[in-house]
Length: 307
Ligand code: HSE
Image (cartoon, rainbow, N blue to C red; front, side, top):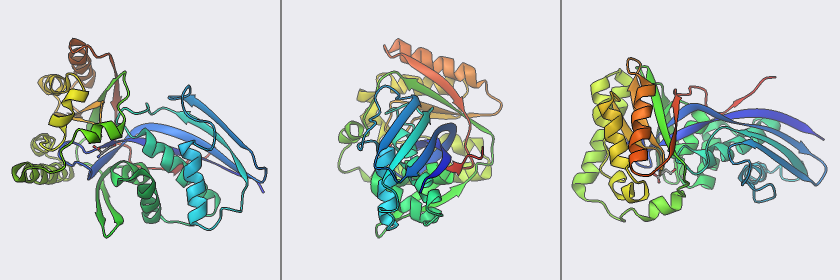
């Protein structure tokens, strides 16, 4: 037996300011995977684009281990003995824009389609969360749009919506990697009550502003008191880059996920390229080279590519 499918999965930006470990948005930047499952006990992996030089091409590969994990969960681990993975990656690695979530969801989505959609999206979310450890990147990678994610009694739940205002998201992507584990290690175990209250309020305000199309409330909601201040030492110039984006007209700017990318939220009226140049300049003034991508919100999530 030999079955093949091509899927595309978006990059994602978690936290979105105050929504630490809770909010995430899908971006119109994609990794593509063509997965072929076969009877031959061989593994053949090729990677084009981002990470082509350093992504493992053996059993350690995260896309392949996600494929195996899903087959096992479905009781289908003996249906196929090997596979061929053709990956075309546009999502930069270890930069805080969801490369590991995209890899995991590519593997899960493709394997799930091949075995006849054994799992629904909610189940895929829970499998992906088990692998990634937190839902705020895998949820938007699966569902698309803006997502609010909570875990209740060990089960992940995702509310997804599209913002009512036209947003462009300007990513300033530094040329260094920041492993999520390292960026979590600098966070305090406990937070002050006023910081918790600040973030609850601002995260709720951001969601309300996005759903209602209110630039003022989106702008307010993008402020954070729970993680960015601690991560600034790992991302030289973080605050300067945020200020530069706002000064050039962005509604706000945030550390994307665990960083080091900084994401500016711009309304349709603003010159997003100018915002990007200002962010790049602020990073450069702090000795950090960065590239700029002007992105939109993806509203599909993981999907099959029809040839
Ligand atoms: N919410 C996570 C963090 C995202 O900020 O650590 C990691 O990708």
